Length: 275
Image 1 (cartoon, rainbow, N blue to C red):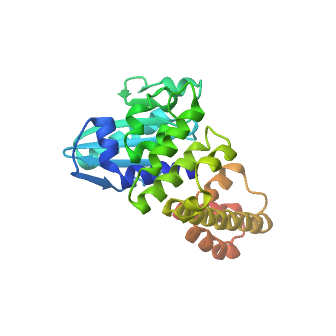
Image 2 (cartoon, rainbow, N blue to C red):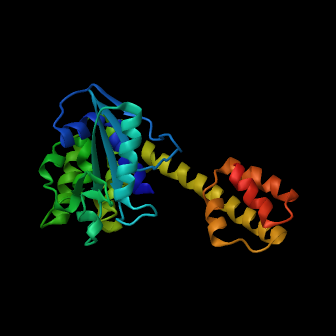
């Protein structure tokens, strides 16, 4: 999730740079939209919606091509929800971060019996690094771009970071670079070119730590609730366990109290259905 958080941070804090890169739109009139959409809420850390004039740029960052819900269907799902809510032109772009031979990264449309939906795909490892190197906000992505000499490319990125005058911006961009560069380079090389203390001072690093702590706490509560349920109503099936894994921390706490009144797994299913 650190890669997702870094990409989302970049897109939401430097929307004009992404709009200029992907839409050739040179404007500061950009609004970052919420990432939760009705009808039933769907949310993903690596999704960003930018409203540029009367157009929405939907960015989806992917480290691995495979996902629980296929990415091509997700793009259709997001499109219909965005269209319903904002009713304007929508440009959708999936940015794959890590090299893959999966056919998923070469697919640019969702096709069903009577439905066809198209979107753009960017495979970073095929991208020319030049446009990314000249824009500080895109430097983290440059580390994953096409190069016959990746180490030299990383050195170029490090040199460009040193030229960022604003201290906070330099710190946060450097932190994102170190996170994303980890997909391609070994830790020793990254530490040679970037100071680790800068990473630790950045807001993105603190955000990653905080989210990690939250997930750790939530996973601990899931484990405890499952143990209690197994003793109370018997062994829980994998489908029900998956539903419990999807509960929020607050819902898990409520379930931990409610399960004291359960007698059978039917009580558990009933509670899940109503919550």
